[in-house]
Image: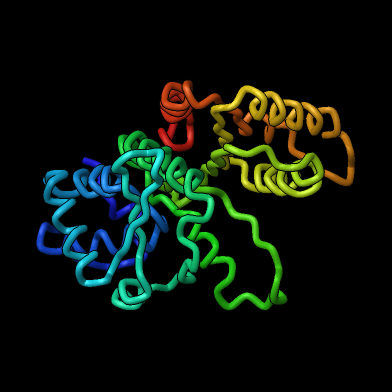
Length: 270
């Protein structure tokens, strides 16, 4: 059974039908903006609930001004739900309140789709501990931080965390790449940062996922660039880091992730 406790691990609550509104509010707090189908997919994996019941709860929360929604004309009747300030305050929201919830809408929705699928697959492993959203990671980095105002923090789209019987942890970082960033950003910031993580954390994994052949080939080129530079003493890259840096086409994501989960020695405690 898949449980959304792994996603809402920072909040203690009883997970049952009487608490559905609380679950919806906290899912929206965690993931920013979601469709009814996505909310249904997560809740229904925790408790037996129908899509129609989810719609009724959403309608009630809209009436109470706890949530609101937008819809894109070209997409028919699909609604994208998000917290209002009242809803955010009602659950004691820890994360910053999004002033423009629809910003980068397609990316947020796609990340949530991959997150749901990743949790579904990871939950088959007894070592699976939790899933950490982008918002949770950002909160962890910024809370009590002495960084100057305007400092940019880079976090993954989401993380799956595994813990073995020796209490050792393995973080799997996921990046859903729908937009190709600048060459400078990849070569001077993103790839060096992740290669440091993979060098320092021998059990860490990085998975880049993209539906675009152009983005796929570009990411692969940047990976090859750093493979050629790995002898550079300034970079100090562990050669095994490249074995744990995966670039995956969207249509192969499920099969590749399944293979990774089945073959990884750490999470299978071999």
